Image (tube, rainbow, N blue to C red; front, top):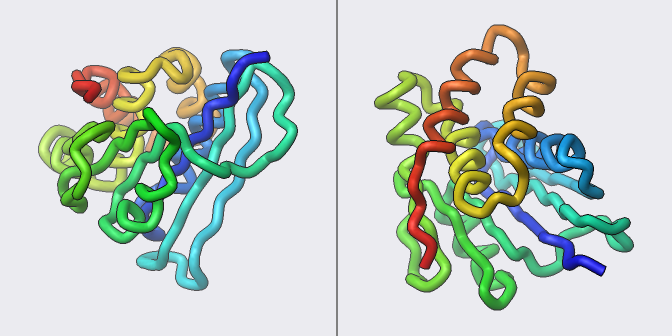
Length: 178
């Protein structure tokens, strides 16, 4: 039996946290993996706490909720503070350096997702896709082709091109694993 990989995304509403989880889950299904996922967010649509969780496995998944994440992807300091304490031994934290000052140094990967989104695309709304693509490129949790297909099938046509550009930026990111 293979080990399931548990991934938790955290941030605040409006950062695309739920979309990132959806894209990862769809990509995993395109790679013929078993997937379970959930998300939650505060009463406000924007600005309140938000999280999305995905479990990916080669085998059927018995429990559909993340218990201890192997990979944490965070886009706000509050999410970092809340979820970094629950990381699995040997787990990785990917964070957007524009919003987070990590306290721990082991197992963290800095991605300037919002900075790259603003500088290279001119729109911070795709920082989530840059960060997700950097996770994919660094860990190989799903194939890059599957993530691009998930973007193609999940993102509205008017946002498709700059989300693909964001994915390309993230794929090109050379994250240094601790």
